[in-house]
Length: 113
Image (cartoon, rainbow, N blue to C red):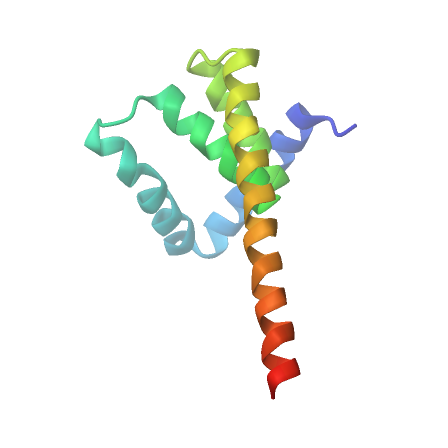
């Protein structure tokens, strides 16, 4: 298994390096990333649980390690996290089903061509 704590430290170090080379790129990301939090409509824990579900869907290890640490920091429990991941699993399976229907549509289009 990956050492998530060390990975997060190394990742943030590399992102810092990118920020020194092209600061506007990282500033732009930070602006975008923080925009939703300013509305106050979702609390930090909920935002991090959503971020974890999206991290799984996006298959982003960096996102997983950053948002796991933040979700825990904001009081998410193992049960909260597991429920959020259940949503990601359901959506991914649903997306596979939807795209399977698209394949069948393409098959029919080629058969009718």
